[in-house]
Length: 245
Image (cartoon, rainbow, N blue to C red):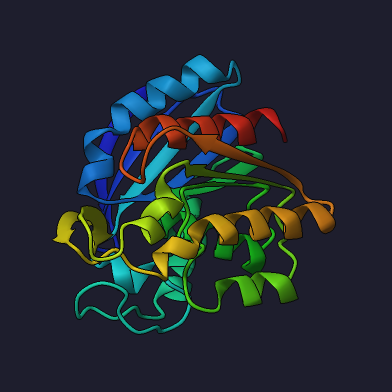
């Protein structure tokens, strides 16, 4: 497998390419994800014997480029935007023509808000057979309402969550916690958010909806909070999607 970095439409991309690939994995990333990307690719190799290529591209504004509709701030003063459609167009109109070639199976995945983006994209187009959403931000305002009223085109959808992620409701104004804001991990003290605390119920509902719609799906619970082993969680999601198409 070869690795190269290049720029496409002002976005920095990283391509891990296997000449025999049957699956192409696509992942929006931030600086933290980038630091772990080599480890993630190696972990996928350990979990699946099917040849794959992976292309990751940098997200500059996490709260704007990955969310499907505008929403008020959850932490701090930064609101969410509606840039997901533009990001999806970049993938389908520019990125895929550059990297897909004759690779038949496309899998879109992401972590946190990028996981929500991957889920949303699975409802927008039939280009992606598989979706790997690791610790996705399904707490996002109106997301479960949207998922309840629509059915994804994707054939297989992987979901995961850390078993401590929904415990935020037990820490209201009591201790510090971490959040990912605009692609950065930051610490806030005494402000555990009740919106985030709904992530457990939301991920269960998401899985229930997909099951009822007869989508091939798995909900996997991982040990720890939102910031534990993100590379390993992404690798498990991608490998499951590869193995279940």
